[in-house]
Length: 118
Image 1 (cartoon, rainbow, N blue to C red):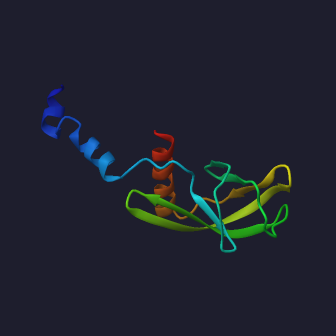
Image 2: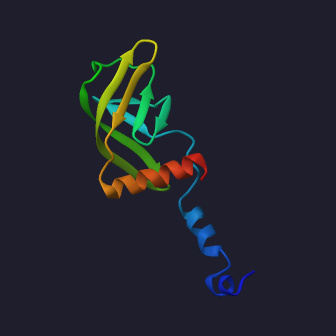
């Protein structure tokens, strides 16, 4: 144990912060398009894939959606703007989205770190 860690609590602060965030999420954020909730088959920063998708969007269409997730005890509902990259029955809906406002972008990054176990 280092000299500095004796004064800072020996890593107890990091453990307490992790415990305060709650259980590790097991699913990606929920995507809400036209009041319909979807769990993405694939999710990454800046893009996602929904399969099956039963809505009215078409390729190259811009759309608004909401991204919903729980960060510990804190429910987060973020308004986002996306673009349909590809839409076929085989691939489903593949979309890119713009980063949300910085406050929500940080919350999303914290959620993804917890979900991926980083």
